Length: 198
Image (cartoon, rainbow, N blue to C red; front, side, top):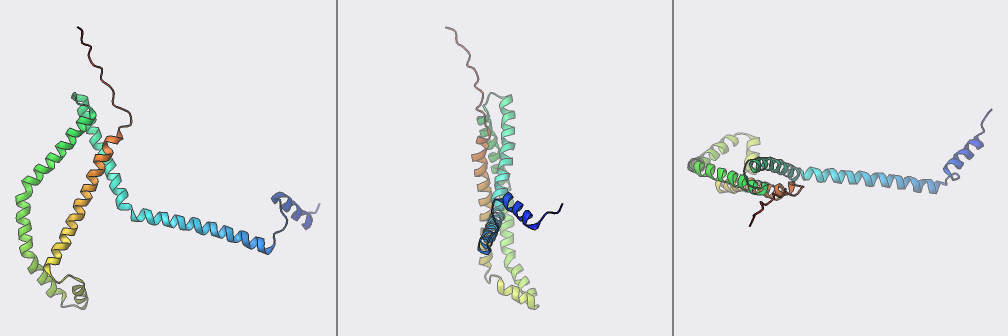
C-alpha cells in the first residue's frame, strides 16, 4: 500500500492544524524565533557579565556568612555553659575578638612604625636605582614613561591600597554584624521564671 504525497501533506496539515505557509508567514515566524533566541542569548550574556563584575561582592557575602556561622556556633557553646542568652554570648564573642585585635595592633604598633619609617627613608633611593636600571633598555624607558615621576605619588597609591584594604574589612565586619543575628530562624527559647511563693 503506497502513501501518496498529497495524503502525507494532508496528514501533516491535519496534525499541525494549518495549510502550507506562505513565504511571508514563514519568514515572519523565522524572524520571531531568531529574535527570541537572540534575546535569550543577550540576557544570558548580561547575566554572566553581571556575575563576573560582582565576584568581589559575592565572595564578600559568602565570607561574611561563613564568619557569621562560625561566630554563632561559638556563641551557642558559650550560652550552653553560661546563663547568657545566645545574643549576649554573641556580643561577648564579638567584643573579645575586637579586643584581641586591638591588643595585637597596640603591641605591634612600635615595630610597624619603625618599619614604615625605614621603608619611607629607603624608598627614594630604591626608586632611583630602579629608574637607572630600567633606563638602560627600550622597554624599560617605556615603563618609566608610565610610572609616576614624584615619590610622593607612590605614597598616594599606597594610601589607596590601604584604603581599599580597610574598606574591605569594614564591609566584611558590617555584613557580619548585620547577618549574624539574623541567622537564628527560630525565636530563642523562653526560660521559665521561678515562682515566688508568698
